[in-house]
Amino acid sequence: MRTVTVEKQPLRTGVLMPARDLALAWGLIMVIAALAWLFTAGQARGMGIEPGTMGMALPLFLVLWLAMMAAMMLPSVAPVAVTWARSIGRRSSGAERAVRTTEFLGGYLLVWTAFGLLAYAGLALTGHLVERDPDTGKWIGAAAFALAGLYQLGPLKYVCLRHCRSPMAQLMHYAGYRPPLRDLRVGLHHGGYCLGCCWALMVVLVPLGVMNVAAMAGIAVVIFLEKLWRRGPLLARVAGVAFLVLAVLAPFQSWLLPGLTPGDMM
Image 1 (cartoon, rainbow, N blue to C red):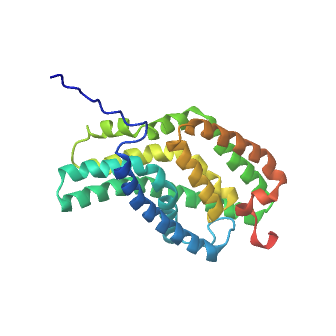
Image 2: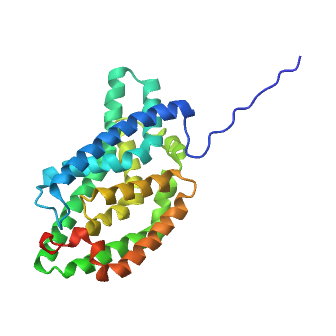
């Protein structure tokens, strides 16, 4: 009697788990992201859109910044984060699993917290410049859009985007990490590439407004599609060209610069 061997179909690019398991895991992540969106939107409603740090002290800004990053980044990070957590679960007890998962998330968030410090300094500087001379805002806005557009079209963007779009390759690389602080290093490593892929998209929040929920939502969609859609690299280039167009228009179209327009001029 001949035995028929049925080969399993390989998973599609970017899919690391069966669809049912992936849907459940993503559902949990979406709940966390939704809560972060609710928190961010609630804070933004009472703050409005103004230049600079809007009077926020650094600790409060970092709290809001991390909530924004959780809302905007978690959906696109889900394939790597969920699969790494599952691999931890196979080899660890409940308490150890919690510690290791916390290390991973801590490393990832530490990278974005460091960038949040730079963002706060940049916002404080731009706010000071706009307060001193409101006309400066249109040139700051043009420079921000141009920087984002050029980076979107540059080679470093695609090195980082290729890394983020190949989660299985990442996990194979991370499997070689050894204790101590293995999971923290994994979070730092993945967070670094994620930052390299997305920091320029965050720069456009300077002219659009750091607490502009509509702008945050639009950027989050772009990030999600860049990393997970099969035409993500093409979308990144289209976004880059769009930002360069906005850079040309910004000095003449004040409606593109709500984050650089003083409240008494809006």
